[in-house]
Image (cartoon, rainbow, N blue to C red; front, side):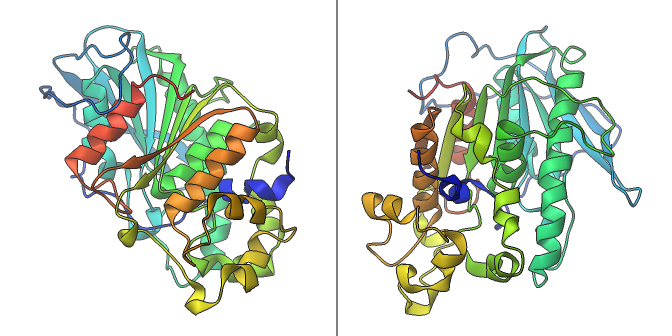
Length: 349
């Protein structure tokens, strides 16, 4: 097993926003009819029953910030009984104003297939020109707010007809940050969390377009000023110990629309960009084996493939897949179908 810097490829997500779904109406419930879908990935035969209607509960509080702000979540609940899969969907970048409203379409689609879906808002809008401030806030967003949202989902499970033993987390771009932390290293307690800690293990984790501090190079100053930042954001010990969670790393098919950097023509292996992220040179072997530096570029597909190799080496059931027709956003109905298929798919081998 290589050292902890191999998990640099599994640390953090701050990248562009996801789809533009309409916001839920505060304090209301709604009923929706199901629609047929096409299956791209073989679903589990035990979990594909489709309920005729959903009840949607909006703006349930789950976390209070030190400044007194309250984070809320929505619950999409099938009306046909209990024992449903429990799915938490984390939206894309809050820095750009994304909230739980941005995953309404995806959450509805998954719930219509027979799962209880919890969609929390985490984070807040900040200036992209202050990466230091974003980095400090991101630790709280991912570790505290994200984990608390998962605990809240588990706390609500019985009431809303879900089985917490069938817990799935979905992270859309930046939402892969809290997904990653809650899957591999949830904290023991969270100040400000309105529910008690939960020990339920994640059965399936689905992470789309995770940049893990590799791309773009906007993180250079943060890492240079605080070398311990990467180590704090990567739960190496529990990952290296292996686990039973099924992990899917996804990337959009249109790599031209992804964040890809060539460092102004400076070869990766000769740049400070690599030295900051791989100070011991332990990831270089992975780069060479996978041919990731052959074209002088680095994409989300590249970093996701590295992450999968690291997880497999540690004994996790992990798989890399390409989402057809999109770049750095789950912007099409087909891409949302793809995620819903994965929620109910057979596990990776």
